[in-house]
View: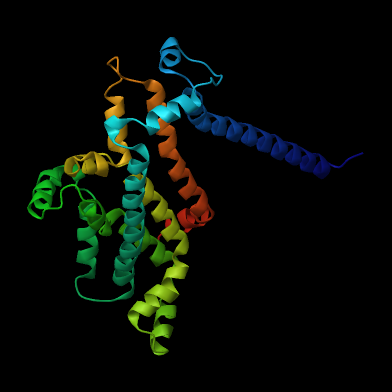
Length: 292
């Protein structure tokens, strides 16, 4: 006869198995729910404007390359590949500069003990509370006075100072960077820039990768700021081109198939960047969210 402890152990195993099955079913459901919108986008990119207006369907149709050609050759937005290149240039420089210099700022605040350090930290955090729209008028006036309209410098240079990225990197440095390493590097004669670039940055690589992804996506999808300073077709970014195409939907010239195709093409670079840096996300988010 099985003992009481054996019954208890068997019951625990069954309970554990049931909980795992329920967890897997729930995760599969959430995954399908998350991917359904992407599947629907892919399906709609294969349908013509008339088919899209006819109603919903789960099956692809035969107009994928027709929509691709329409979006690719739409002269009203100049040239779609040019818009994708413009957006990529801005997003790439933005994510690199934001991550590097925000991490440098956080490094300085964490490593150096100087008067006013807490004040500087609090001032940077307060900047996070100011919406972009509040300073938009002054920003546009400065851009016009400097003659930087229809250039990408106003989209790239301000991204160097990113309070949200600074805050994340400071939390990560506090929790993962031993100050003894910095002191040891100084004793060995390493200068401050070498210590930061060759000793600290490799330790911060997971958090940097996460912030680069966030910064890239934010810049890639940014419509508000480029719309304020760009008014020439050859310098339009992808969100501006998409807004032009979407604005024609209510008229006879609108093509919903083209809209879905542009949205699909806009997602591809983001997915590539995510896949390239995804191996750092779990470790970066987990460690960076813990305050030391």
